[in-house]
Image 1 (cartoon, rainbow, N blue to C red):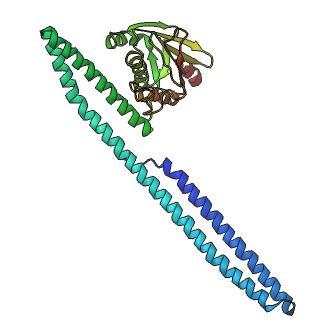
Image 2 (image 1 turned 90 degrees about the vertical axis):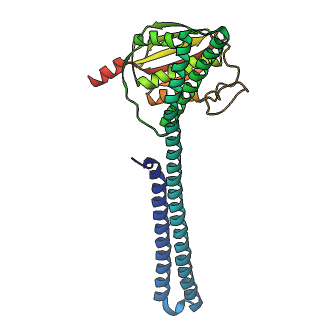
Image 3 (image 1 turned 180 degrees about the vertical axis):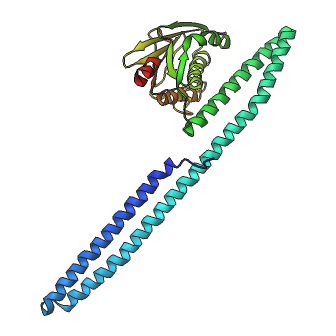
Length: 309
């Protein structure tokens, strides 16, 4: 397994090689000019003052000393920069691996806890305990959602690759409605096939629906897909929630809270980054009715068939 991403070391190495090469070139150029002046003075013989020749010699020594010191600074500074970059990459990898490991380890007991709560609900309990169990299930869903976001955030930081394949949107309708039973999800698929990574597209859908429920207080979401120019497919998510009242340019920035009750911005950040990595784009705004509106543009499956033909 790679300890660091070698691509991030390339730029510091290029910078060091370039600056050191320029430093060496300027040093030899200065020494060459000084040597030419000394040779010219020697040929002129008695017409040149002895003090002038000594001054040329002192300048040559000064160029050598200062040039060597300058090159030493460049090499030592460049080596320090490369070492710091390597250490930071190693540190980031340890942090990402830690979060990934902890998240995976937490999934098993969380799934067990959820299963036990669902079993108790099926057996039937009194009204007070029933309310607590439903709250427990809701909180476990929220924890699981945050863990999935942490996993995706770690994978994005490591620049893990995505697998683009043909996805049929009609197969998702039932699973969406089952997972988000509290939402009235209305779909209209004018274009049914999209070229995308399955887990990435599911993550974008979940983040948007979660945003509508938790932060918008929505009860209904309309999801529309339609073909657009350039062999693209556009998704349009519109809910009947309260929308967003802040600066949309700041929406989706990591860990930036707009109010005391707002989220961390991880969900929308992940949606935007995943869209870009699938050769698409992502934008948000308020709809004319005041709800939250998100648009996701991705390549359609027909674009791959045409390019492969």
